[in-house]
Image (cartoon, rainbow, N blue to C red):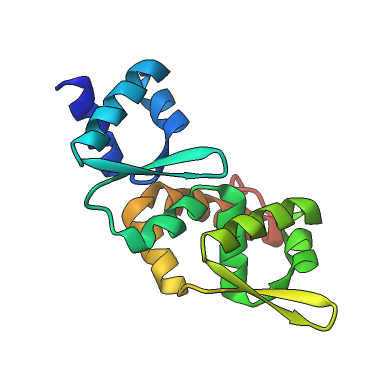
Amino acid sequence: MTHREEILQYIRKNPGITFRRLADELGIGIGNLQYHLYQLEKEGLIFSKKLGGKRYIFPKEFREEYEPLLIAISNETQRKILLLLAEKDMNQREIAERLNLTQATINYHMNALSKLGLIEKRKEGRNVIYSLKCDIEIIIRVINEYRPKLWDKLADRLIDLMLTLKGGDIND
């Protein structure tokens, strides 16, 4: 298998992968990877999107409607925010408290999610309330289809949370 075929196959298995992550995971030099990606894009086999200083790469057959969601769930903080908003609409302070992050950090991620078209905001008095613009079932489907490894991480965290609430240890 050639480098280019290996790269294309990896992108098909990991749509929305960032350029840097692709280089790291395949162990290919930056210049070499740039050349092959340019050729693949020129041949119409892949396309890429730049957002927030990162380049996300997709196979040509990828469903365009999932692009923004896949970009967002690739970022841990944004994924957590989406899952929180799936529970209920919240303001920035509530999200910051739940995630134990600063409001400035949450503001940055809310702006990114807003640019992706995944959330909407509305004013209620002095508060800005954020809500999901996409269906939670679509989020689940995208995670399941395109990022199945995330389910393992989410399941591990759920087990840890349950053990913490129970006050136990896995070895009990």
